[in-house]
Length: 537
Image (cartoon, rainbow, N blue to C red; front, side, top):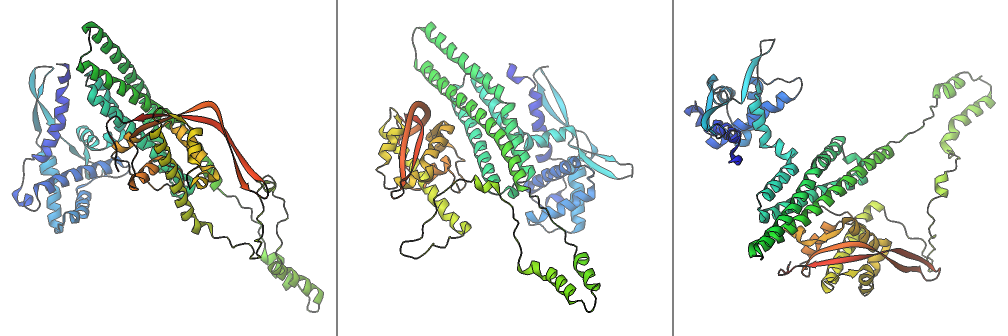
């Protein structure tokens, strides 16, 4: 029974929990002040406080600092206790419960490796005396291990833990649950990618809203998720390939394929697809995180402004010459007055040529209205931007909706050029191609590689932030959902580039003949339809 190896390690966690919830040396007088659950919460809160203080440099955790902490949090429990009662409660929690009145608390566990029971000592905190004679408290190694497992380890090893689960499920040949677990890995990667995209939007809009700590946390989380786990995912992929081979051999040995083997093969194939997709997301996130580093440094560099200031010594240039003026020298008086007042009336611009403006993109000069009304006053960009963003979001959603509808009518796949010709009949066609919007959306979808509607619908965390005028696939799918539309029984669309060329000419001004030609590679869309489910929204 290899699965029971080091069973006592698992029971140690239970022993620590038992020391808190099934506490000894209880005082009925104090326990009556609060409920059992409230004291459980206070005990764990005190442990968190001790850990926080002791992990901070140059801070010491004393009985008085713990009492002050309890005084701050007791109002959350709607308790108003006198200072003396808080001090009594503090000593009760620390000395009577957590330190068990200085007595060793043991918990009996089974050690399967040795085939016998043994006692595990439980001690979460210890006290020590400083050189100044002050008694301070800190967590023991057992206390740190317990506290880290309540929150920090899950946060740091979230993706790694999910990978371990998938690995174990495959080893135990529980392929049905492994399918769901592989989807969970994809959801975690997609969620992290959405976080990265939102971080990039904030960075581009206002770098001042992004702190250096936020940037460090984001990059470190992504690096931990990718670099350490990429090899694990490769190993899982190899295990899946071996599982496929074993199922084929088992089928050949039996001479037939029963329902159990057929279902296992189907599950293994789905796991393989999901793992490949997870690897693709990992590679993409790795590239995007490196691009984010460059963007962050560029934005920082652009945000730093250097200004040259010419210091004007008013005393030297004005006051002293005025004091030295001879009483009858009107000419000198005029000269100094002219020097004093001239800058106030005729400030001269800096006479330098900005070469950047010479190379700026040339655009058509706006003509004056023929009816003589003149050039309309431009609105302030900040006031008009929300309306512009709303229009762009609406057109992005239209493109995705029409693409899904077209995919439903072409389950065998289609080319972008075919979709484009059909899209011309849409009354909003000109809005969708304005500013190259349609083509940029197609390029974004090609970068994504696929539009997985089923996975998005199954994701419980598919709430998206505002798109702010930028294309966001999750936002568009959510908008279609809000509009009470449906996805026409389309499960997934994969996008690939072809060697065929797509070209379109758009005329902007009939009088001047100004036109724009769009030329790019055509795209091929492969469609996967849902077999028996129609998603009505």
